[in-house]
Amino acid sequence: MDDKLIVRFAPSPTGFLHLGSARTALFNWLAARSRGGRFLLRIEDTDKVRSEERFLDEILEDLRWLGLDWDGEPIRQSARFDLYRAKAEELVARGRAYREGEAVLFRVEPGRTLAYDDLIHGRIAVETENIKDQVLIKSDGSPAYNFCCVVDDAEQGVTHILRGDDHISNTPKQILFYEAFGFPQPHFGHMPLILGPDGSKLSKRHGGVSVTEYKAEGFLPAALANYLILLGWTPPGEREILSLQETAEIFRIEDMSGVQAKFDVQKLKWMNGEYILKLPAAEYAARITAQLRSDGLDPDHVPAERLAQAAELYRVRIKTLREFGPLADFFFRDDFAVDEEGQAKHLGTAEGKAALALFADRLAGLDEWRHDTIEALCRELAQEKGLKPAALIHPARMAVSGKTKGAGLFEIMELLGRETVLRRMKEPLT
Image 1 (cartoon, helix red, strand yellow):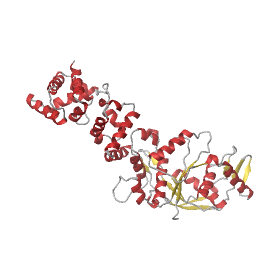
Image 2 (image 1 turned 30 degrees about the horizontal axis):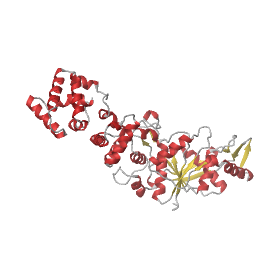
Image 3 (image 1 turned 90 degrees about the vertical axis):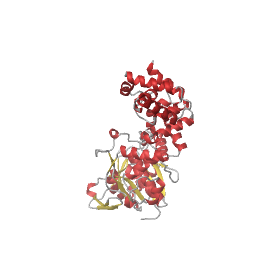
Image 4 (image 1 turned 135 degrees about the vertical axis):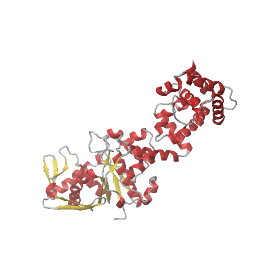
């Protein structure tokens, strides 16, 4: 392959960045960075009706969020219509294209075989009998996709085009344009599309399909990027957790898979959980705080240090940042969500209330309010009364948190503080 590798990612700002498009961007970025090449960005905004600046802003933000950078300023196709028309007229003048009203069409010569070696699928050949004359310029004066992207790729010096399998049918048509202009033909590689767990095309019914949605759900950018890369490439050995930089050091286009990959949100959650565990404490606390604000919880009611401690209690229990809020809402408000079944089981009986009253009464006289002293008191009280510790723990957990499970009760009680804990433990008794 050419050492001066140049690739591009060319989103259309007609919607949010889809997971499939994000994966395409990631693989192009890796191809460039692994070879010391260039990763270019081109905005394909020829559809003036559907293209919106807000979508472009979101796409660029999502690319940055995923950890991608690009070389040079992005070009916009909407600013290049004169160039495309001039190139089409050049082909008309040479007899390779013709006008049909306001439109310009390229003559496809029958009886030819167009073949190329796909970087992922190998040899692909198409007969020109199966290709009709191609529109270069539409009747409204706008350029056709296959034409303007060839003009741009040639002008930008793109050497490798990595994109989804849905573009395989476009490639022979584009090869005709490369030949007509005498442009160097780039290397093409087509990635199988991402499928849903049921083998159908990835869609809303399989969960979110845009990067924005996964960002809002509390997935970390490094985890999402890592997972998307594994849907089309397998690192050597059995290691699965790799940063973008680590991947760029070992990535080769030739190692990309031609087999369709199924999107598994549970695998993504597992991977995200692994990344959460590796976050430095300060960054983890900052991300949790930002997620709480995004989800409508007010973390400012809780001292930053205590919030960070609470977040640490749940670090091993969450797979996304958003999961923390519902599990730990009782740290931030008194009107926290209550497990009604658990409440009936542990606080809806005379035995449960008696155990809670006993525990609360003994806790009121505890000298040092620490999780270890609270635990020692609990176990001593249970032994004294001939109870299992669970008989005290379950009603207390329900009273102070509204949950039947979660982080260690005694650590929770220490962080909530004596006053809050005793007040909440007494409320079910009134």
